[in-house]
Length: 258
Image 1 (cartoon, rainbow, N blue to C red):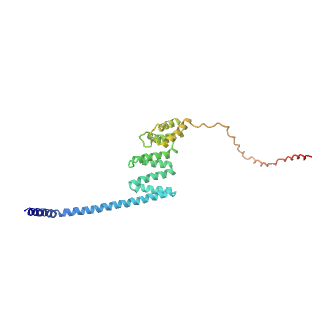
Image 2 (cartoon, one colour):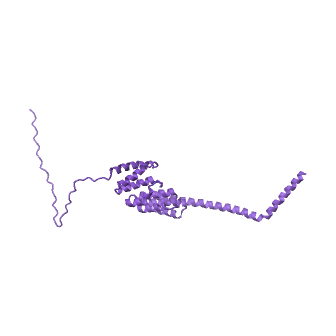
Image 3 (cartoon, one colour):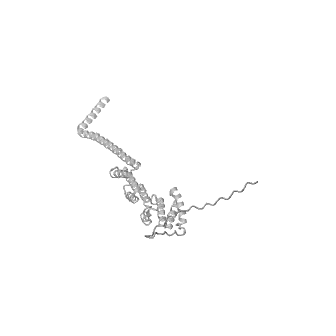
């Protein structure tokens, strides 16, 4: 009896399954086809991404090779092209490299390029801070101290990632402008900063000695001799002929002892 009941149950389940498949065979077929097509499309998309990444890697490596070969202008153009058309990661790195190459030949233009990166919110905050510092390093030698302070003074506080290095640049700019008091303020901030990098702190100690010595005082020496300008129309002086000095006759040698 139990075998009979089990067979009936199995037949009943089989009929229900067949009925379900018969009723929903079209939607199920569409679902299976969609899964197969979706998997194939995803695979195709990933292969395309991999191929594009490899191509961008080749382009970036070629631009780096141009820079290594001493062709900065060609390398700069190559990096700029990657920055415009490359994927986000390579584009950001390429913009940084292009700005560095530009700054090597034109510090002011390179500083503007780094400032544009520092103000671009699509970059990571650490990359923006690095770009701002590198722009300041280019400008410290070419920009007036007052303009440099106005541009970068607000980044000397601990809220900026590279504030210790920025304080060092501000101190250098102030000393160039003769404001040793302001330079001392920035140097003291570095020495009091417990998280300042060791290299920056060591240089700050040297800056402190320079600030304490104050500006160099020029040595007051004798004025240079006045330059005699030739009178217009006057005859040129005759060349001086050096007369050999008369030779003094040698003293007679003492007679040999007898």
